[in-house]
Length: 260
Image 1: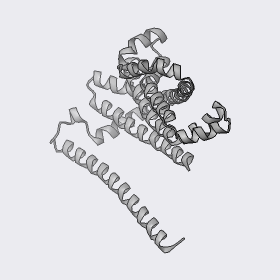
Image 2: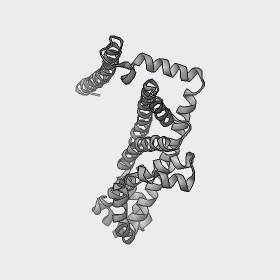
Image 3: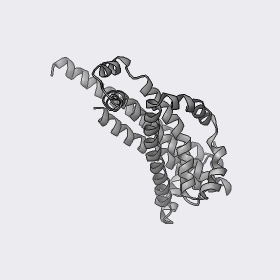
């Protein structure tokens, strides 16, 4: 390894460290200003809550043995919805790619379903599946799956045509082209779609918990708003931020390792 490359790597590490340090500093500064403004009555802590009140609320939930139960329910529903969405997206995208007739038939329907507010289908799903976990997962899947299918299918469509022609000259089958060129060429796109899926599924789960749930972080936020307990609402939002950040980082780590 040359000295120039070592210097470049060192600068790269310093830059990455400074970015992380700045991000953490901004978050800490925001929390400190928020707490100071609440303690000095510059802002109304009844409406905006405060970091101290949020911590106390989370401690109370923990003491009542409710904190990890709500977190576990939301994470479980999100992961199930994510696995269903990701699996179906790849399967449906492969089917549409291999059958041009089907892709042209369903293209306008996918566009219409994508533009349709999925919350409007919530009451129908609840009637069909009942007010239970199945309805929440179904709503989450509906919110995320259409965009996922379109992203993966468009990636398949934009695969290098020259590579496909090259395989065809060697009498490669559709299966060979799909497995040897199309999917490997879109590996990064598929993994990036998964990163979007995890956040969309979390949004869908919270939406479902707003409509029908007796447990979960969405339920905490809804219940807190109904009884005007803003500390509970802000605690739920804080938990969502932490969960979404951790899930995103896990998918990002898997993505980086898979790409390497």
